[in-house]
Image (cartoon, rainbow, N blue to C red; front, side):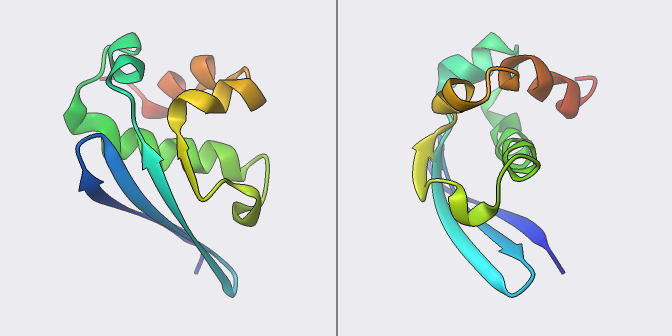
Length: 93
């Protein structure tokens, strides 16, 4: 089954494994505190932000095209709608 597994890897940092069919990709993701602050979120919600960010990305490209290491802050460079869409995905706080 396809899935996204998020594991805390340090302050503001997560390991992500994405399985699509037979392929599994691994990623290291930084969640900048300023990004959370901008959405009125706390560090405790960072893992949920990472999961939803990957779901967002995978709707637009295969996991194999997602960078192996990146900060969530770069996503709007490629997908400007990210800043507006992600809070909606997170639902009511």
